[in-house]
Length: 109
Image 1 (tube, one colour):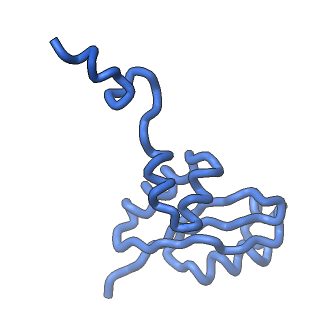
Image 2 (tube, rainbow, N blue to C red; image 1 turned 180 degrees about the horizontal axis):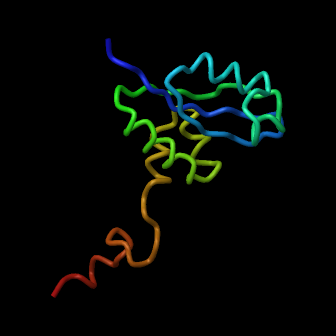
């Protein structure tokens, strides 16, 4: 039997988001909802599961959790809505030195 690992996003009563990972999604969500996990969510009850995704490798689940935790709110909301086009736009590098922002005429010799 393949073990499944989950990442999840909870929406808290104050409108903020919490991202976590677990090997037992139902149990973990219940623990959050009942205030059994002390910390961020226990002070923002009730919480609601708004996104989850499973992985068959714990390394990938933890990696995805860490990545999503660094995202801004709008990017998390795009993921929750399943708006992958907008999510892709948020993922693009927009600084001035990025190749896509360079004037193409400047590259011609």
